Image (tube, helix red, strand yellow):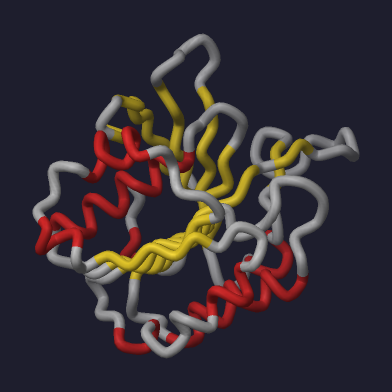
Length: 193
């Protein structure tokens, strides 16, 4: 769905786009290709959703995943994995869901941490997500008037991929990566082309 071979990705998601399901879809694809996953998330989704998207994986595949729920303390929880990140291989994935709060400015220390992750290992697949916000200036800057959190500080380390809702299409979402756009369907089992 998203080409991770081009380097670290910052998914900036608009309202009602369900970025959590996209994260779990990327995780599922990585596990299916024998990759290891470190999944940092503010809050784990309910068990039914986890089961729907990741439940088909074997115990052996699931054992290749480490889940860290960080709530409001991403910096404190990150120390646990900084020693592991350098050992990740190109097929492995570090995914940080909601790396910053969905209101106000992104904290400078959190932006620095996201850049540090990439510096620790530039061979692994790395995906971070945050919620887009509307451009309050009225100038419609950014992507269709939406702005990515921390874009100024992270723009040199991550490329921004936009996740936006398609008007009047309840189960469809647009993924925009540079000049490429792809419509994906949201199903009970995650995102599908």
